[in-house]
Amino acid sequence: MNLRRPTGPRVLAVVTAASLVGFVGYLVYLMFAIRASVPVWLFAGVASLTALVMVPSLLRYAVQAFQVDVDRRGWTVLIGQYRRELRWAEISAVVIKSREIEGQGRQRPASALYLVLNPGVSMDVPRRLRATVDGRPAVRLFDLSEPKIEEMQFVHDLASLAGDRLEVRVHLLNMEMLCEDARQGRNGRRLLPAFPPGAQGVRTQRWLNRRRFPIFVAWYLIAVIPTLLLTGFMAQLHELLGAAVAVLGLFAVVAAYTQFVTLFGHKTLNAEWAIAGTGLVQVVGHRIFHEDMHGGKAVVLAPGAKRGYGKAWLLGFPNVVALLGDPRTGRLRNRDDLHALSAVLGESPHVADRAAAQEIDKLALQSQVRGPTKRDGAEIARLWMSLTKAGRILAWAVVVGSVLLAGGWLLESSEYLGGAVLLILGVPLTLIWALYALYRISALLSAAWQALRKNH
Image 1: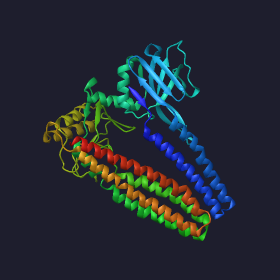
Image 2: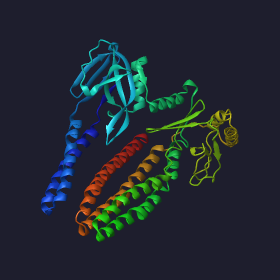
Image 3: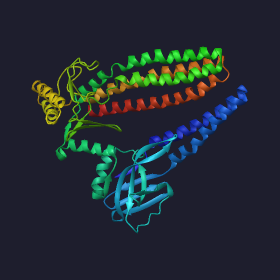
Image 4: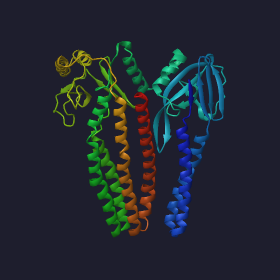
């Protein structure tokens, strides 16, 4: 098992550092060109120092060596200036657990890999890699988000090498391992596969998200445009009044986006679930969803009972968590999956859960046994989904362009507010949009490659 730091983030770090240096140089040139006042120079100085402080850390990340090799003999570690070869006999435990990372005034959790060495084995590690696990000296090698790995595959590969030495203490990974056990039919667990499967599932996801673009347009017309116009008009009356409206408007625009644009995401409904005991568990990205099927809250909703779900029967606790039918066609889940759900719900001590089990049993009589899996063009459907998501680049370009135009307008009617809007909002939004565009384009190219490889 060989781990390397991915090239993409390192290149991105260099490009970002060069962009920051160029931004600072242009900012200084601009201040001399327009003969800015003392307050503007102070603001520009703070922005320049902030940008320049970030440059060394970005370059250090780009050039730092990172190589971790694991095999039957042991570990070979090269991280920065630290190089060490360790045999398995020198290691008492390999631990994956969460640690807190300081950043932006708050702490955030990260899953990290630790090696706990046997007593008497020399540590000889830099201070930044020293740690303790259960009071024992340990080496913190890296956070699982640093190298380019698929976490579950990494854990399984590591388990095959470390054996009983491996301890996984991260709740998310334990839930993913639970789902993996269900996929393999281990420990009496059962997996409810994604529904609908294959290309139909991708089309269903696209159908569930069909309202997001009209809502986005409504958010732009109702929240963004009025905020920008009101800020400009208030700035013409008084610059401080315009600044107050800009700050309040920014909070209003973000709040409106959070409440309305994400309203119809439906990101988890047609994904796979795992039945473990009386629980229904789902892992999507870095989020865990767990529902107790013996909690007395189960409900089965008929088509039309809840808007936005078309012809689908739904399972909720009481919020909708899973599709029992296809919203587009009304086709039910296969009979085996429905019986698996009703079997657990039917053993609940609560009347509501048993009633939901009876409803699911009725649906199972109308469903079909799972047929053989066949090739159905899922890669082509995912390609179209990626193409649709790439179209969001244009939508966000309109938003960013509107902010830049508003900043240019404010430059003519205010002394400081226009420059502040361009520097604080315009430039960061432009950089974020550029990175987002690169991400979407790379995802589109990846989907195109997968479709080409699977169909030829």
